Image (cartoon, rainbow, N blue to C red; front, side, top):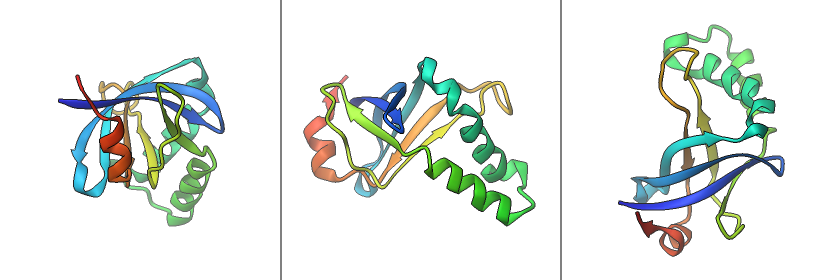
Length: 126
């Protein structure tokens, strides 16, 4: 299966690594397991707050609180870079981290809107 190994940054600080696999290539959606680094601890509360407010099973009751959680998440300026340090240009990057909170699943990451040319240039067979 093709994969793209990336480093994940929040406001230029390294927060993790991931091997992205195609989920919906025509829409530029790629995802995979997220392996946090020490720097992830600083942003995890923001990630968890968005999960708490947006996750359907949590039934966020207040749209203003959900809007604020999305604003705080956007403020993380999440970005993905190749192993060579080249920045990629998806329209969004989301870390899904419910492990130990609502489920036992390990954190995952999903990038959406990754331009096809970038994906094809960097995807390699695992």
